[in-house]
Image 1 (cartoon, one colour):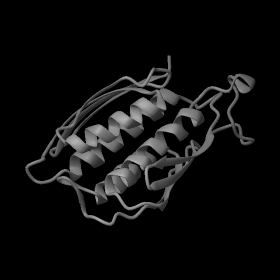
Image 2 (cartoon, rainbow, N blue to C red):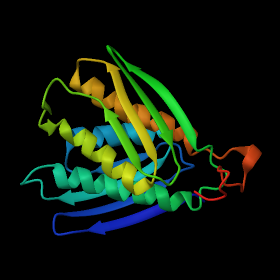
Image 3 (cartoon, rainbow, N blue to C red):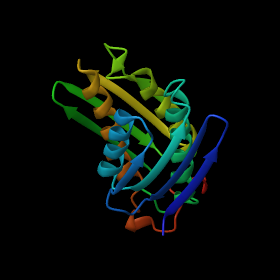
Image 4 (cartoon, rainbow, N blue to C red):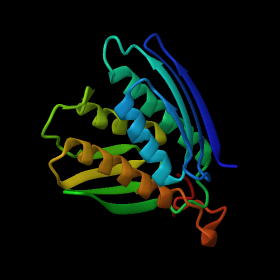
Amino acid sequence: MRTGAVSRKTKETEIEVAVDLDGRGTAHISTGIGFFDHMLEQLARHSLIDMTIKAKGDLHIDDHHTVEDTGIALGQAVRQALGDRAGITRYADVLLPMDETLTRVAVDVSGRPYLVFRTHFLRDKIGTFDTELVREFFQAFTTHLGANIHVETLYGENAHHISESSFKGLARALRVALTLDPRQLGEIPSTKGVL
């Protein structure tokens, strides 16, 4: 079973995350931030990772701590579920269209965290959600998963579509990269023998 569970408690947030990498994309998400919940549901559904995420944060201040800490905990839970990463496909990329928007996402689940985020929003908010928090989530998730993730919106205007295509693109790339390759089961996908 490739599952992981993380509890993270700080003075700012309390986060509980559980994942099953070999799930069906079932999501039970509650962060107190409606738009963010919607993005996390897309991430679960299109990656086929079952996710349970419960977050309580200092939303009376703003959404930043809750979004960032959720990214940290989710990255840690996926990393835990991967174990030594033996047998995974490791690399994947996708072009994800959403109406007028096209976003490219490439992933290397290498153990080496690095984010390239070339996505720009024409508006500061989607409803009440700060668009700059999309990058904050991706940075936290990338770092704590230990992956090299590139996200680039090639074109687009609608902030909701840009955000959603980024999350769905990540989901579809993870769906492939985390899949066990039957030709290398038990093998580390690296000439170094370790990730």
